[in-house]
Length: 126
Image (cartoon, rainbow, N blue to C red; front, side):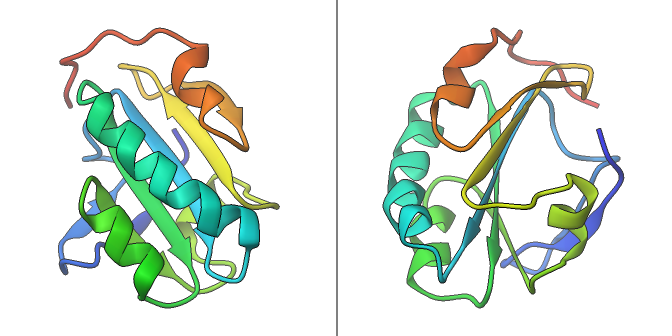
């Protein structure tokens, strides 16, 4: 897993050393129409897949998108070029990344198929 450090919208630290695994990280941009459509679906899927620890990274500012995501997952709001998106090399939105129980990137993509593309063993934690 790439190294990153950020603050969640609740004020807590989020970093690569302590992110519970397995995890799914989704990147959304508030100015992106597909992101506005995909974010609520991601939030619902995060609830449906409790074995995955969900982290949503919202590029832009806190608002309706981050509020929807906060109902089901940990949220980081960062500016363009922020530390989490930069660490994962995100160049387009939406973007999703599935990390297995070892922190290895198991799948990437631009939609929710990332969540079903690779099996992960639940319960692994660092």
